[in-house]
Length: 91
Image 1: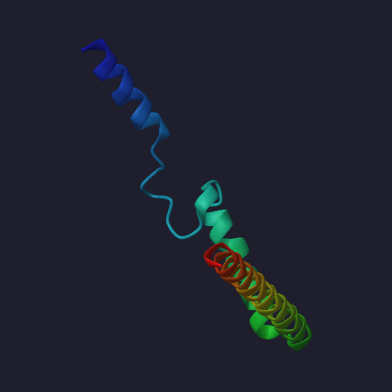
Image 2: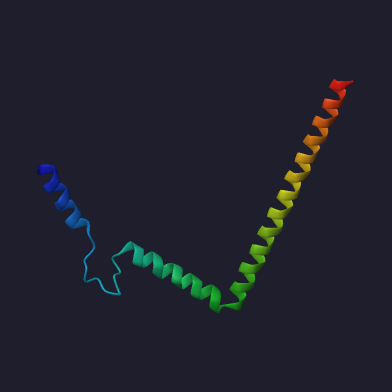
């Protein structure tokens, strides 16, 4: 019973106030959302930042595609080696 009261007291002290309203600067989630919103506004409103983000995304995409092609080639090489090894065993 004592543990339940202790847990209830901890829960009540940790709960955010219900009357925080729209401007709850003490809430970490509010501050995180504010920063994310400011970042999105910066990206959407600044053409230079937009170009840099798009350019970076294109470089990342091209690098990813190159990596995928390299892995495909390595898989094909391994398949060819296995086929040669299998033919050598059959002869």
